[in-house]
Length: 112
Image 1 (cartoon, helix red, strand yellow):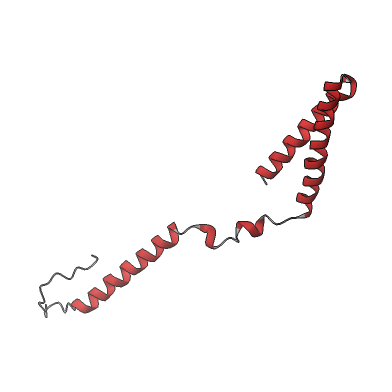
Image 2: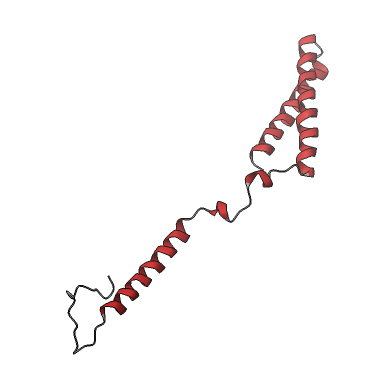
């Protein structure tokens, strides 16, 4: 307690102590401390917009899905097919480009 109210209902007239006034001051002090504590530990999610709103389909995400996702997957599958067929001249570069595009797509989606 700041001031303390344990005076056993005695009025100290020589120093004019008022228990109700001090109790109110103590309660206001505790209220301020509690509000500061709650504001400090409150999660920031209430202030930020919802994650579903932030992950809307933007232009860069659409381009990444089309170019990195679809084109990269198609390039990788074509490269693997050409490697199995025995055409190493085109199979190796297409496989490498496909792996790079698919990896870039996964990293883009993970860390955006």
